[in-house]
Length: 230
View 1 (tube, helix red, strand yellow):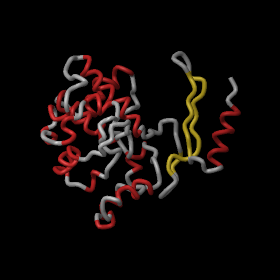
View 2 (tube, helix red, strand yellow):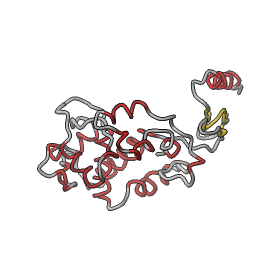
View 3 (cartoon, rainbow, N blue to C red):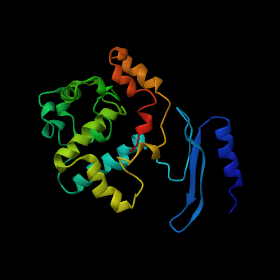
């Protein structure tokens, strides 16, 4: 099987700076037909070659691969119902606008909870009070990272364990995902996700002057992406 065209395509993408590097794998359950690394996994502050063992950030794939799957398992075990209200699991949500929202609403992104908010601008003990009351009032589908953060806490409350530990026990081992994890041993094995994030900085500025919170720059400049993973 000849993969010359595929290889030329990847090299052209790197040359045109569409992306700095890539790992390409082609195979099935029985055989690996092609497995090569190209370009660099990091370009600043210094270049680092891409390898076949480079770990990539799964970002929002965490929602279906981990959070939604763990919630489905709890449902199958009879430990939660889709109609259960958030306030039943999280004390801060009692007597709040979002406390009446359901697990089904969180799973289907129909609670009206906003897509995103820079929670790192809030003190840890303020975050759940904020999440309990922030709502757009929409009844339509609104993709929400915040909603899945709430789902994560519900899962931890019901299961009595951390989300990353539950993923290891109930999903990773079962599917044989040996190279998929929340906490890589070193940052050197992880490919940076992005060089800064002007989009996130723009959203964060709507809620306050991020320049007044110096440590926030560690979260919205190249430092964080070097540490991004599942």
